[in-house]
Image 1 (cartoon, rainbow, N blue to C red):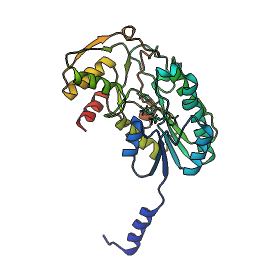
Image 2: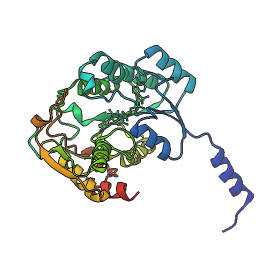
Image 3: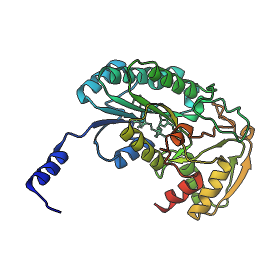
Image 4: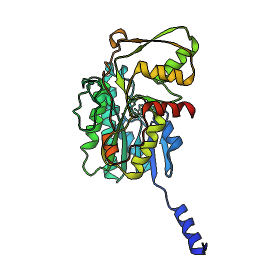
Length: 300
Ligand SMILES: NC(=O)c1ccc[n+]([C@@H]2O[C@H](COP(=O)([O-])OP(=O)(O)OC[C@H]3O[C@@H](n4cnc5c(N)ncnc54)[C@H](OP(=O)(O)O)[C@@H]3O)[C@@H](O)[C@H]2O)c1
């Protein structure tokens, strides 16, 4: 092969082409920090919630005007599911109103929006172990779920917006506040202590690393519309905790219990199993089964 001057100049030109600018929100969170670490091929800009507040609608537009992104990956959200029951206005301001303004700005500025939503938009009353796909009727039972669903609606109703919404579930990561880290810390601090874990709620545990991989595909391909995006298969919280502690080699004393034995302010869906039908139809589903994702997470 001949390496001509033209060939060399072309490579230099490609390398110096302006890369699309992505604004990643929620960079201190589980998913946002993973996206900042792993998204490839773009210029990444993020802002912490201190200088970017989704609930401050005017400041939000000003921030976007100052960054002028080509793409927004919105990982920011009000995620305190129980607390939301006591401050619904705040949850709606962030997850619904703020997201609506974000969507409007993106539409007016030809900016692609990748937004993350949740399995909690469903009631959870579907018979076990049928999974929820994108066409299933939503009926959130919690303030958090309602605010996230309104956020989805606010996005989908903006004319001319190029967007995707990825509904995911049961996120976990090595750092951050999540179920897995809580169980791990408790088990490590006292292996003999009995830990009761709910065994009648089913879902699809999904490591943020796997979701970030799927978001990369969504952004590269500019997927349009609503997609479910969780690891394959399903288990209960008890199954998940048992498999994870075994995988990590942590001795512990886990006991299954019912949701009634572990009451929470917000009632969790019994069935929040998602199936990634649209991703699979497009041959773009990058998730493994939840056990394989857990093994990959543990070995990373
Ligand atoms: N965690 C799950 O199991 C789960 C399941 C399904 C769907 N999801 C969705 O997945 C996405 C990512 O969740 P995650 O687990 O990464 O959440 P997370 O760890 O709780 O992080 C949320 C991020 O949003 C930021 N934030 C909160 N309020 C904000 C506001 N008013 N303005 C700007 N930023 C704000 C937080 O900043 P501060 O840290 O400074 O507050 C943090 O960076 C969310 O859309 C969530 O609804 C999560």
